Image (cartoon, rainbow, N blue to C red; front, side, top):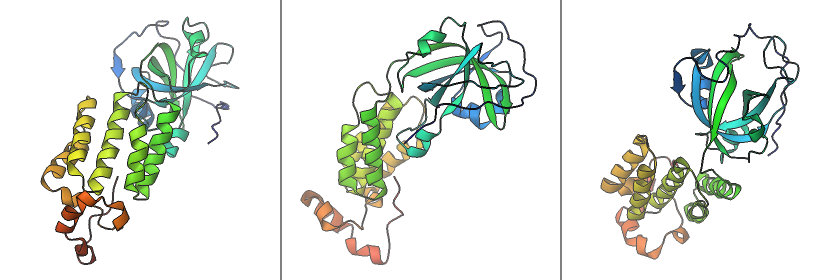
Length: 276
């Protein structure tokens, strides 16, 4: 997939505020996400914010009429939100490039040597909004540890592609290779969640429950969907079975349980629609 990392900023904006307090916030800094800011940018206008991103590339500022972000004074860069699942094509292509940092900022030069997927904690202020997007001045940032890598993204992408085609065993093979390097906890949690679903579809509920427990342990916030999956897997594992699988995809040690649930029921009582 080809990504264009340059933007034309020939826009007419409302008057912008003058710089506030140099490189330091003058008011409360709101801990949020880039996704939340992009979803409701007007709610964050003139608000100091802090969020995590994944670095993509430096950009190029050009023709910024009626905005303080002139190319002689500012550089811009492209990122993905930290929470974006960029192994999915739509998420990968949804870059955000309206992050600006003053060239005389003592941290600016380090951005030029940042690697793709480097996670960064951004602190800045939403200076303005235009056409539903926030324009954010970055005043400081901090490099974070753990990040995705090309190999893990490839395995996740291929694994979920197999899941979309209900090819559970090839999906397991790909997803099992995804945990490599120092991946962020929320990415590891997503891997375990996908593996759990694959094993549930194949009738291996005990293995699935183990992956679901790992997924819950890795995330700091409560993932109700994962918890509900784990609870249902304990009491009604048969509800996850993919009853339309061919015999070749079913392990011999799982056949008695599969047959006990009645493979012939699909004609009169189909299983729920397959979901990841």
